[in-house]
Length: 396
Image 1: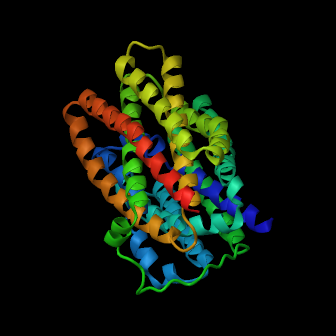
Image 2: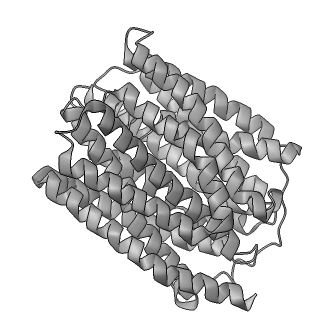
């Protein structure tokens, strides 16, 4: 029970970081308010997402990645995140506006590196501590609890209780810092061991993909469905430019989506993984289509609802994908799946982030339609992924 509580706290801590230090909402808003900080805007999402994925294969290949104690690497990741969050606190409270973009860039890079460590090792820890039939609900519970904290933060922003939103965001950085410290202290109660892996016997990334057709299609599906997430920052900019939604309402939509939907998605993914991905992806598709088609003509409250539904849909994609990964792997191949898959997706995110930022600067409407088409392709690809998962289940 103590290990479950510590794991729950650490996972909530990750979610709080994602909600309060978000490349989709708070960080773009903060950068946009700084003189000369516009150059950093297109780099926020690629650094945050790809930066946490690209190192994972090399972490998995290292001596730490081959060690039987999975909690060692996980704890190091939490400690590195502590340094990253400390950088945000230092940047927000002490640096001048001219230096703040550089402080944010460095802090975000360190934070992403810490997330790379926790992502690699947390899968094995969660699989060992949480029963298979409860993993989806555990993931959903984490999102719901962190979403409640995010709603409180959003209401403070909307109510303008501190007179200046930037001051409240800086206070949010301090709250995250305390959260990471507590998570690190509690993490020492978690001890998870698996069979030590032979470093020389670990297949290369190419071998991982060539030997496993299911891994190839899981990564391909993830790249398709990630276009729902890639669209969110651009939708945020569209709404902000048209004064459709202020920063507080964006954070509120994010918190509400986590609070109201994550546990339901978790329960659903415990029953039917692929169906969860299908329903969530279709919800994203409908919300995106509605926003792209008529964002300027719609009232503010309806834009808020559509943005909320978009976030709800992507949360379902995320929960369904994570639960599927845990269910189709075991302790012998899970680390290889996570490392190879996340490194590949990280490269994809870095390249696509640069490409889509360029397309957005030319013609935003065309780029959003392109994202919509790729997402629709991902929904169709779920048919193939479903057949592969069923084939593997039949062999067990």
